[in-house]
Amino acid sequence: MRDVTTAHPVQDLDVQPTPLALLLLGREADPKSERGVECPGDLPSPSDPDLVERARAAKEKLGDKVFVLGHHYQRDEVIQFADVTGDSFKLAREAAARPEAEYIVFCGVHFMAESADILTTDDQKVVLPDLAAGCSMADMATAEQVAECWDVLTEAGVAEQVVPVSYMNSSADIKAFTGRHGGTICTSSNAKRALEWAFEQREPSAGKVLFLPDQHLGRNTAVRDLGMTLEDCVLYNPHKPNGGLTAEELRNAKMILWRGHCSVHGRFSVDSVNDVRERIPGVNVLVHPECKHEVVAAADHVGSTEYIIKALEAAPAGSKWAIGTELNLVRRLANRFAAEDKEVVFLDKTVCFCSTMNRIDLPHLVWALESLAEGNLVNRIEVDPETEKYAKLALERMLAIP
Image (cartoon, rainbow, N blue to C red; front, side):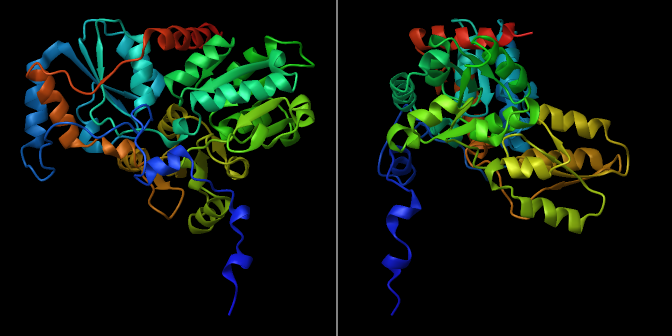
């Protein structure tokens, strides 16, 4: 009889019962987590045939007092009620541009609503229809872990050479850390310029970047756009002593990448790319830069969500596209461009929605709008003043980058 414990030693699996894992297993509760807590109140039944009319009526009753934001990855049933659709940063800026709106209903995830709260006025209230709509990537970097990382960099004698650059897909705490340490925020659209700015802040031969929390966007931008090598990048694992790195490795690195990733974009593989090329001759493979480096290298085009949309808008009739990003958006684009004789398919054969984005459904939206229409403020996302101060500083640095 085979000894399975010998064949698969536990220590080789690199899995530990982290606070996040325990949270996902239902063994812990963390109100500060991106995954939030359960939504209070009684939700309408998803089978209620009047949900659409109820949402319209509540939104009409609120009038200009409410402004609804819908991220590209949201369900169609929710997107139909959005006043503006876009990526996370675009939506946060749109909210800030509507000071007359008392309520900002953000149909997205927790970190996006935090960013909206940071950029809007104190009189505006940001509401997330389901507090459990979080982001697994943002959860992969906690304030405590990042502070410990900075201690490791300090002990290695490199902290003064490091400029943190944090992806928009991060918590307010991580944005605040970035602001305190002279860094900036970036989006998938401006990551190249943000990295260039960061390296300009230090001596050219000695400067380093700590990129949080998505390793793939950091690696792809450094290698594809800035001409670095994979050897210039090291991976900091917060679950290992000293991040699993030696002081020498930290001293030699240009990019210190946090061990985080997007659970949706991380599913795409080179096999997905090869398979779709065999199935659809002449297909253009277009992927998001949150995908793994080998997938990005195998694709024809790489770009942010907004880039993907614009690329399809500009594509000629009869062209074929395989898109590597969240399925709600891909399906919406396929329906939109079918009339223009553009074939749009999902890159992978496996259906993959963003599970936390999908938590914002029509019952939650109806509940939130009706509650606000009745004068009951629910599910408010509010960043504390100290965190907001430094997170806003990091965001403003991004806005100031030419």
